[in-house]
Image (cartoon, rainbow, N blue to C red; front, side):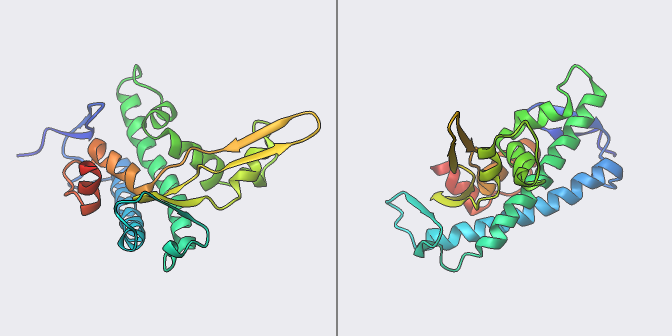
Length: 214
C-alpha cells in the first residue's frame, strides 16, 4: 500500500501527498542528494570535534583557536571549507522545503523568511561568507568592518564542538567606528537541531546523545 503522505518538516507540520522519497524526482531528488552531502559533512565535523575532545580535560571548558596545541592534527583548512559547503547546502535544503510549503499554502512564510526562521545564523554566514566573501564586493549595505571580518579565518573550538564566526572586527576612522561580526555556529549543533525537524528517523550518533545529556 502506497504511503499517503510524507512529512518534510515535523515541527511546522509540512506534508506532501505520497511517498515522495521512494522514487524521488525533481525537488525531492535534490533533497535526497543534499541530505546525503549534509550527513557527510556532519560526520567529518564530528571526527574533528572528537580529536580535540580526546585530548581535553572533560572537567574544563575548552576554548582553542589558531595554533593551539589542542588543535594539532585537525585539518583546519578542510574543516573551514566544510563549514562553507554545509552553509550553502543546508540553506538550499531548507529553502526547497520552504518553497514547497509556500506553493502549497501562500499563508506560510516565503522561502527566504522560512530559512531565516529555521537557521538565521547559518543564512547570515552563507550570504556574507560562504556564497561569496563580501570583502570581494563593494556593496553599500555592508560596512568596511563587515567586509574585513568576512575574509578572516573564524574557526574556534569552544566547549565540545568547532564553531565558525563569533569574531569581532573593530574599525575606527575620524568620523565613525564600525563593528563587524557574525553569529557563531557549529555544524554538529545545527545538524543535531535539524535532524529533529527534518530527519527524526535517523539514528542518533554518540555526539547527539552526548549533547542531549549535557
